[in-house]
Amino acid sequence: MNEKRLKEFWNQEYRDPEFFSLSDEASSDLQKFTRWLQKEYGKDVLRPEVTVLDAGCGNGRNLLWLNEEFRIRGFGFDISDVAIRQATVNAEKQKWGSKLVFKTHSIALDIPLEDESVDIVLDMMASHFLKEKEREIYFKEIARVLKPQGVLFFKSFYIEGDQHAKDLIKNESAGEHNAYMHPRLKVYEYVWDDKAIADTFENDFILQRKEPSYKHNIRGKPNKRRSVVCYFEKK
Image (cartoon, rainbow, N blue to C red; front, side):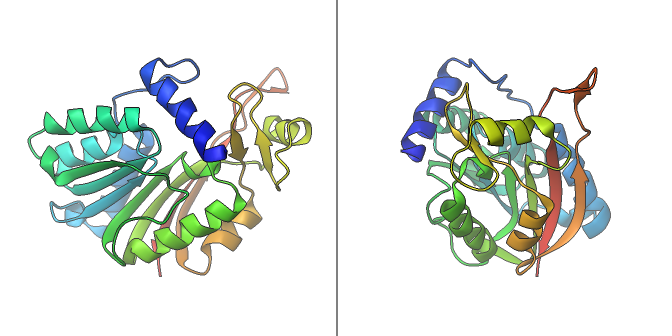
Protein backbone atom coordinates (compact mmCIF):
# COMPACT_ATOMS: atom_id res chain seq x y z
CA MET A 1 0.00 0.00 0.00
CA ASN A 2 2.88 2.37 0.78
CA GLU A 3 4.34 1.87 -2.72
CA LYS A 4 0.98 2.33 -4.44
CA ARG A 5 0.28 5.51 -2.49
CA LEU A 6 3.75 6.89 -3.24
CA LYS A 7 3.37 6.24 -6.96
CA GLU A 8 -0.01 7.96 -7.05
CA PHE A 9 1.27 10.88 -4.99
CA TRP A 10 4.39 11.54 -7.08
CA ASN A 11 2.62 11.06 -10.40
CA GLN A 12 0.14 13.73 -9.37
CA GLU A 13 2.92 16.06 -8.16
CA TYR A 14 4.81 15.78 -11.45
CA ARG A 15 1.61 16.37 -13.43
CA ASP A 16 0.35 19.28 -11.36
CA PRO A 17 2.49 20.21 -8.30
CA GLU A 18 0.51 20.95 -5.16
CA PHE A 19 2.91 20.42 -2.26
CA PHE A 20 6.39 20.87 -3.79
CA SER A 21 8.06 23.43 -6.04
CA LEU A 22 9.60 20.96 -8.48
CA SER A 23 12.58 22.42 -10.32
CA ASP A 24 14.43 21.56 -13.53
CA GLU A 25 17.62 23.06 -12.12
CA ALA A 26 20.32 20.97 -10.45
CA SER A 27 20.34 20.97 -6.66
CA SER A 28 22.79 23.39 -5.04
CA ASP A 29 23.68 20.52 -2.67
CA LEU A 30 24.74 18.44 -5.67
CA GLN A 31 26.88 21.24 -7.10
CA LYS A 32 28.56 21.62 -3.71
CA PHE A 33 29.14 17.86 -3.66
CA THR A 34 30.87 17.93 -7.06
CA ARG A 35 33.23 20.66 -5.84
CA TRP A 36 34.07 18.52 -2.80
CA LEU A 37 34.67 15.46 -5.00
CA GLN A 38 37.08 17.39 -7.20
CA LYS A 39 38.93 18.77 -4.18
CA GLU A 40 39.23 15.39 -2.44
CA TYR A 41 39.68 13.04 -5.42
CA GLY A 42 41.11 15.27 -8.14
CA LYS A 43 39.71 17.34 -11.00
CA ASP A 44 39.21 14.30 -13.23
CA VAL A 45 37.02 12.44 -10.72
CA LEU A 46 33.97 13.36 -12.82
CA ARG A 47 35.17 12.10 -16.20
CA PRO A 48 33.06 10.71 -19.07
CA GLU A 49 33.48 7.03 -18.10
CA VAL A 50 32.15 7.59 -14.56
CA THR A 51 28.77 5.97 -13.83
CA VAL A 52 26.28 7.63 -11.48
CA LEU A 53 23.12 6.12 -10.02
CA ASP A 54 20.40 8.54 -8.92
CA ALA A 55 18.02 6.59 -6.66
CA GLY A 56 14.71 8.43 -6.64
CA CYS A 57 15.76 10.67 -9.52
CA GLY A 58 12.43 12.45 -10.05
CA ASN A 59 12.54 14.42 -13.31
CA GLY A 60 16.23 13.64 -13.68
CA ARG A 61 17.47 17.18 -13.08
CA ASN A 62 20.60 16.16 -11.19
CA LEU A 63 21.74 13.44 -13.58
CA LEU A 64 20.97 15.71 -16.52
CA TRP A 65 23.20 18.41 -15.05
CA LEU A 66 26.05 15.98 -14.35
CA ASN A 67 25.77 14.68 -17.90
CA GLU A 68 25.74 18.18 -19.38
CA GLU A 69 28.68 19.37 -17.26
CA PHE A 70 30.89 16.27 -17.15
CA ARG A 71 29.51 13.85 -19.81
CA ILE A 72 28.98 11.15 -17.16
CA ARG A 73 27.00 7.97 -17.73
CA GLY A 74 24.01 7.54 -15.48
CA PHE A 75 21.01 5.54 -14.35
CA GLY A 76 17.98 7.19 -12.81
CA PHE A 77 15.24 5.19 -11.09
CA ASP A 78 12.00 6.60 -9.76
CA ILE A 79 8.61 5.25 -8.75
CA SER A 80 6.82 7.92 -10.83
CA ASP A 81 6.43 7.06 -14.50
CA VAL A 82 5.36 10.66 -15.12
CA ALA A 83 8.69 11.92 -13.76
CA ILE A 84 10.62 9.33 -15.76
CA ARG A 85 8.91 10.42 -18.99
CA GLN A 86 9.92 14.02 -18.26
CA ALA A 87 13.52 12.97 -17.57
CA THR A 88 13.71 10.87 -20.75
CA VAL A 89 12.38 13.69 -22.93
CA ASN A 90 14.93 16.11 -21.48
CA ALA A 91 17.79 13.63 -21.93
CA GLU A 92 16.95 13.36 -25.62
CA LYS A 93 17.57 17.10 -25.96
CA GLN A 94 21.12 16.95 -24.56
CA LYS A 95 24.30 16.39 -26.55
CA TRP A 96 25.40 13.43 -24.42
CA GLY A 97 21.95 12.50 -23.12
CA SER A 98 22.10 9.08 -24.77
CA LYS A 99 24.47 8.09 -21.94
CA LEU A 100 21.59 8.35 -19.47
CA VAL A 101 19.02 5.64 -18.78
CA PHE A 102 15.86 6.53 -16.89
CA LYS A 103 13.54 3.77 -15.70
CA THR A 104 10.34 3.54 -13.67
CA HIS A 105 11.45 1.42 -10.72
CA SER A 106 10.80 1.51 -6.99
CA ILE A 107 13.93 1.83 -4.87
CA ALA A 108 12.16 -0.46 -2.38
CA LEU A 109 13.06 -3.30 -4.77
CA ASP A 110 16.41 -4.79 -5.77
CA ILE A 111 18.46 -2.42 -7.92
CA PRO A 112 18.71 -3.81 -11.49
CA LEU A 113 22.46 -3.16 -11.86
CA GLU A 114 25.50 -5.41 -11.60
CA ASP A 115 27.75 -5.73 -8.55
CA GLU A 116 30.33 -2.93 -8.20
CA SER A 117 29.20 -1.24 -11.41
CA VAL A 118 28.60 2.29 -10.10
CA ASP A 119 31.09 5.00 -9.08
CA ILE A 120 28.69 7.42 -7.37
CA VAL A 121 25.21 7.02 -5.87
CA LEU A 122 22.87 9.92 -5.18
CA ASP A 123 20.18 9.48 -2.52
CA MET A 124 18.79 12.97 -2.20
CA MET A 125 15.64 13.04 -0.08
CA ALA A 126 14.41 9.71 -1.46
CA SER A 127 14.94 6.80 0.94
CA HIS A 128 13.08 8.38 3.87
CA PHE A 129 9.87 7.25 2.15
CA LEU A 130 10.94 3.61 2.62
CA LYS A 131 9.75 1.57 5.58
CA GLU A 132 12.22 -0.15 7.90
CA LYS A 133 12.52 -3.48 6.05
CA GLU A 134 12.65 -1.68 2.71
CA ARG A 135 15.49 0.54 3.92
CA GLU A 136 17.48 -2.50 5.02
CA ILE A 137 17.25 -4.00 1.52
CA TYR A 138 17.88 -0.68 -0.17
CA PHE A 139 21.14 0.15 1.59
CA LYS A 140 22.45 -3.38 1.11
CA GLU A 141 21.74 -2.90 -2.59
CA ILE A 142 23.52 0.47 -2.62
CA ALA A 143 26.60 -1.15 -1.07
CA ARG A 144 26.40 -3.99 -3.60
CA VAL A 145 26.33 -1.85 -6.74
CA LEU A 146 28.95 0.69 -5.59
CA LYS A 147 32.57 0.04 -6.46
CA PRO A 148 35.14 -0.02 -3.63
CA GLN A 149 36.02 3.62 -2.85
CA GLY A 150 32.81 4.63 -4.62
CA VAL A 151 30.97 7.56 -3.06
CA LEU A 152 27.42 7.89 -1.74
CA PHE A 153 25.78 11.31 -1.46
CA PHE A 154 23.06 10.97 1.16
CA LYS A 155 20.55 13.63 2.21
CA SER A 156 17.51 13.06 4.40
CA PHE A 157 15.43 14.37 7.30
CA TYR A 158 17.29 14.70 10.62
CA ILE A 159 15.62 14.50 14.01
CA GLU A 160 18.43 15.88 16.18
CA GLY A 161 17.28 19.30 17.37
CA ASP A 162 14.09 19.17 15.27
CA GLN A 163 11.05 19.60 17.51
CA HIS A 164 8.75 19.66 14.49
CA ALA A 165 9.80 16.11 13.55
CA LYS A 166 9.43 14.93 17.14
CA ASP A 167 5.90 16.34 17.29
CA LEU A 168 4.97 14.60 14.03
CA ILE A 169 6.26 11.27 15.36
CA LYS A 170 4.33 11.75 18.59
CA ASN A 171 1.06 12.85 17.00
CA GLU A 172 1.09 11.00 13.65
CA SER A 173 3.00 7.81 14.46
CA ALA A 174 3.42 5.30 11.62
CA GLY A 175 4.04 2.45 14.04
CA GLU A 176 7.80 2.32 13.41
CA HIS A 177 10.68 4.02 15.23
CA ASN A 178 11.14 7.68 14.20
CA ALA A 179 8.43 7.44 11.54
CA TYR A 180 5.09 9.14 10.96
CA MET A 181 2.32 9.46 8.40
CA HIS A 182 2.51 12.97 7.02
CA PRO A 183 -0.80 14.65 7.93
CA ARG A 184 -1.08 16.53 4.61
CA LEU A 185 0.75 14.31 2.15
CA LYS A 186 -0.72 11.07 3.60
CA VAL A 187 2.56 9.21 3.01
CA TYR A 188 5.04 7.46 5.32
CA GLU A 189 8.19 9.39 6.24
CA TYR A 190 11.21 8.36 8.31
CA VAL A 191 13.52 10.71 10.22
CA TRP A 192 17.16 9.79 10.89
CA ASP A 193 19.01 10.17 14.17
CA ASP A 194 22.76 9.85 14.74
CA LYS A 195 22.52 6.26 15.98
CA ALA A 196 20.55 5.14 12.93
CA ILE A 197 23.08 6.76 10.59
CA ALA A 198 25.95 5.00 12.37
CA ASP A 199 24.19 1.62 12.55
CA THR A 200 23.12 1.71 8.89
CA PHE A 201 26.38 2.76 7.27
CA GLU A 202 29.31 1.83 9.49
CA ASN A 203 29.77 -1.74 8.18
CA ASP A 204 30.10 -0.82 4.50
CA PHE A 205 31.02 2.86 4.45
CA ILE A 206 33.43 5.43 5.83
CA LEU A 207 31.84 8.78 6.72
CA GLN A 208 33.79 11.53 4.96
CA ARG A 209 31.59 14.53 5.72
CA LYS A 210 28.45 15.23 7.73
CA GLU A 211 26.59 18.53 7.58
CA PRO A 212 23.26 19.08 9.38
CA SER A 213 21.09 22.00 8.34
CA TYR A 214 20.36 24.80 10.76
CA LYS A 215 17.69 24.44 13.42
CA HIS A 216 14.73 26.20 11.83
CA ASN A 217 12.82 28.23 14.41
CA ILE A 218 10.78 31.41 14.13
CA ARG A 219 10.18 33.30 17.38
CA GLY A 220 11.19 30.21 19.32
CA LYS A 221 8.78 27.84 17.56
CA PRO A 222 9.78 25.02 15.15
CA ASN A 223 9.25 25.97 11.54
CA LYS A 224 11.04 24.23 8.66
CA ARG A 225 12.13 20.58 8.84
CA ARG A 226 15.79 19.83 9.54
CA SER A 227 17.95 17.76 7.19
CA VAL A 228 21.43 16.23 7.14
CA VAL A 229 23.87 15.71 4.28
CA CYS A 230 26.48 12.94 4.47
CA TYR A 231 29.21 11.92 2.06
CA PHE A 232 30.23 8.27 2.43
CA GLU A 233 33.03 6.31 0.78
CA LYS A 234 32.50 2.59 0.34
CA LYS A 235 35.08 0.45 2.12
